[in-house]
Length: 320
Image (cartoon, rainbow, N blue to C red):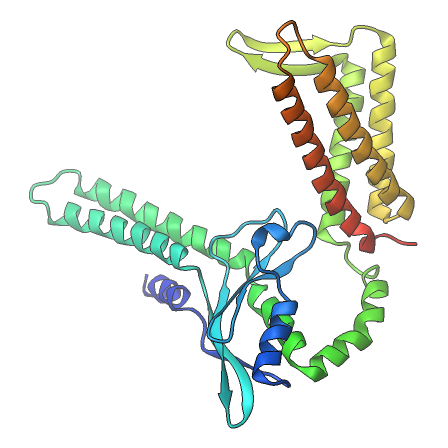
């Protein structure tokens, strides 16, 4: 129990103080770090970035990974100072104040609940209340541990970004190793994004092929129970088999990181966006609402453009 309390206290207070020495003057250091980071989270769509505020008197940076959220990831909070004629960025890695507020509300509230249950005289439910409270504390601690584990590399990653922005030596080494990074990315373990896309495409292909074999086109639930829709003819089943086979071949190409598979992914996304728009336009009934139709079509195209931009950024993982 004492270990858990100490661990939560360290998470609340943050890391030990850290500092980064700059090779430049004060104003240039601020501008260089600002150029190496993004100002808003919404500007990060396709690749991970360091995002936050960079000012002389206040620096607050976080690592932002597209489509990955973690309220308990570490932020670097600090400021620039001049010491002995040199510029330093000093601060510490700590969680967001709102995350600390949640921690205080959760653990403080549960602790008060357990204490009141113990202090209440002649309470038959005190043991149950203590058991439930202990379970809630354990759940909160487990959740915090999992969030911290997900962000285990964030502090080191942010430190590397800051060093490359402020240190002339680190920046030169990064430029020299830039030509190696791309070729080395094809050696060893495949990137997580490649494995995830491969799994999604393979699952789509298997579902389509198995559905064609069983004759089931779709299934959904409604208030009356499970509703199963079957293929109307053999031609539609053959189309489903062809689509499933194409998805499986594409999954294999993505896994092998062929450039042709990356291009096929672009074509698939474009065709999917066009198909969505055509489906919406063809689904209008007697009560046609052109404003709603335009809104849905535009929203679909925006989503398609987002995924196209994201997939375009994955080009670095594929062979020439």
